[in-house]
Image 1 (spheres, rainbow, N blue to C red):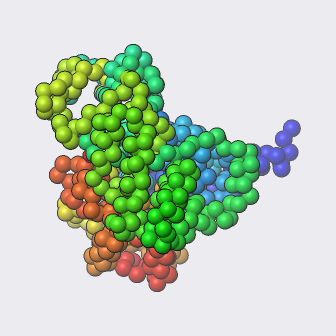
Image 2: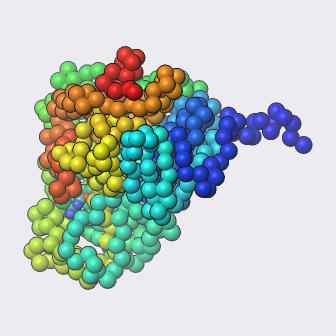
Image 3: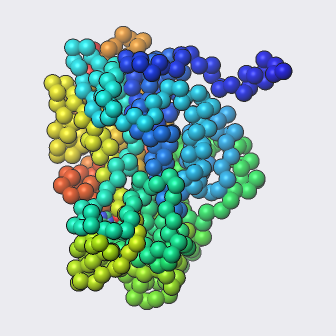
Length: 556
Ligand code: NAP
């Protein structure tokens, strides 16, 4: 028989304070949209720490958010596993053992399911429930939320935890409907997988996703044609199984690792070297890059402090990676197409890979430069380019990215005070305060919204910071009997300016075809969306705002 002690050990860490919401319950203190990293942690904070009635509405049938949908071949996180996880609970951090340096998509889902089960979160999540609209009712000071199935729910607080990269972008290429083969977008990958055996596959897109998928698809496809518009840098990930020794190191160094992640600009568990590219001789620099190339991963960016601030400094890294591409890829013409990169290294989100460039040495892989010869149409049997060349295909894989950051918010009909649509408030680009709140939309919080570090940071770190801030804010409101919080328009103006200043201090806004600017979506305003001033600085700004009585917000 289980003793009280063992029974306690097996149950979730904190005893549940509220029963599962009844299926028909429709009024809550807080509604949270999305059950990925952000939604899970926000639910835990509001339900179990603040004892609010809270419900998560999730379109998928399971937890995971981005990782619920992105199951394409090779899908793996680019952050190292010991940093791609929650740090809010030391026991949770120490009890979960990652198996590889970078977690694969299935392992991230296993982790998030573990978190959800450990804290008994699933009873407060409605799966298979897509939110279509959320309207603020000023008289009641409540959000009226509608789901695709026509359910209506209300809450005082509405918190979006919809992720930054969750609205798939399938480009509008003429003829897609006529294609007799199969097509899939990497961000909506079928759960049963796609069998490429014996198939002629076309893959469009060479961002982080296409670069991960290419070598894996090439292993089973009869033939793979990669359609490349913008050549891209990539650094070897050097993924490996984690040794017991490293796993022990992670467990034993939790406080130090968590501290590093909170203090570094990108939220990773490594420190950016405090040296300029020009502090060292060309020979020393070459040796530093070689060593960083061997270590692999996003850490390559941390070899020098000025890679993203100074074009001349960046050129040295760019030239180094281009030389590696030329060394790896045997066919000279293909190597040139791959190395003909027109933007500074890491000014677009830098991919890391496992045998991406090597894949082009296979007999069954070909590269098509669609900047030189653009895709003109999809036909019944494949892809045709402007020159009239036909590429016969059985399967087309769209690794064409997302309507990033604003897309997941704007695809819902969100309306604030006086029925103002969010799409109208943001018609010239996203405008908010600290990435958290939009003027005219009281009690609406957007976790890792545009204007916050989000995608420029290791996501779980950015998420924990925003969720902690929102939780502290709601606790403050309750303690002070405040019913409504709303960003002041003048604070929004100032913050938008800060976001622009931070971006312009880097090379990031100089890339015309970057999704950071919305440039991948026709008609989307060209506005640099994430806050580029670094996570540590952002955290200090947010903490200061709270300490000064929520400066810049109207509380009533
Ligand atoms: P992406 O970076 O936006 O790349 C999309 C690719 O598709 C680009 O090469 C783009 O070319 C191309 N493309 C789009 N429309 C096209 C068209 N009509 N014709 C030809 N090419 C077209 O998308 P992603 O690779 O899915 O990555 C998005 C982000 O998700 C990443 O930057 C990263 O933040 C995240 N991500 C993370 C991981 C990870 O951690 N492991 C993995 C995958 C993705 P242009 O560049 O010319 O527009």
